[in-house]
Structure formats: structure tokens, C-alpha cells
Image 1: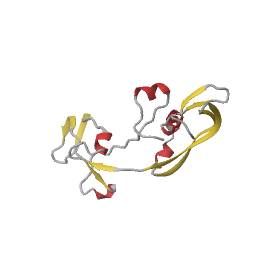
Image 2: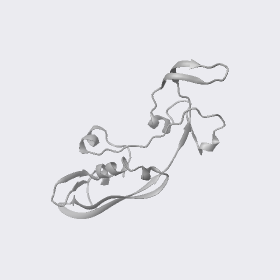
Image 3: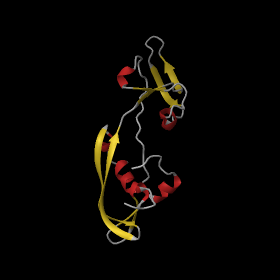
Length: 156
């Protein structure tokens, strides 16, 4: 498809010509709200059955779907924790009314820029008792305004 616009940013339109936003925002609405696509593996995600796109001064009717490879990665590292409460010295248990961790920036951890954090091949490699497990999924913009405020790092 010859165009000077990267595929995720191609504008889409409804049958009546109403703007729907760039392809990535159509995908973002589905990705952010469909947890079944967040499971590891290959997924075919239907994005739109009937949309129009402009390419080289022509408007084309298209069906869009995304083929997505989802991976789960495991990282181990230090996470400062601040809490208010009591510790039972005999049992080692805690009774806390306030627990707060330091700010976690997954992008820095994944890129190796967070000191002390290492990537593991599986979650079975951990030889210590894990105290906190955090899961996250990258979110995509769902509107043109979100796209303008923070362009996504990846592509569809």
C-alpha cells in the first residue's frame, strides 16, 4: 500500500465519511479492553470489518485485523518498600495499614537501565521467595488526543 504515512497512523473513516481516527487508535480500543488478547501466544485481532482509508488520493474499503505476538517476560530486582504497621517478631508476619513501593518504570527495567534488575528465562528460575509480583500490559492510545499527547513506542 503506497503511502508516506506509517501504517499505524493511517486515518480511517466510516462508510459515511465520518473520521474514526488512525488505525492504531482503533486497535487501542480493542487491545486495552480485551484481556483475552493479553495471554502469551499469537493472536489475530479483528480491528474493523468495514472502514475506508485514503491512499494516494483514492479512498479504499478495507477490513483490518492485527496479528499480534504476545510474550510474557520475567524480571527480578530490588524494590524499596515503605510501610506503616506492626511486625510480629515471633512469627515474622506483618500487620500493615500502609504499604507503598518506590515508583516502578517497566520501560527502564526492560531496557536494562534499572540497576539491580535482571531478566529471567522463566518464573521458575527464582531461588528466593518472591514477596511482590506485579503484572502490567502496555496500553495503546484510544483517541487522536491520546495519540498526540504520547505517541506509542511500538507499532501495530
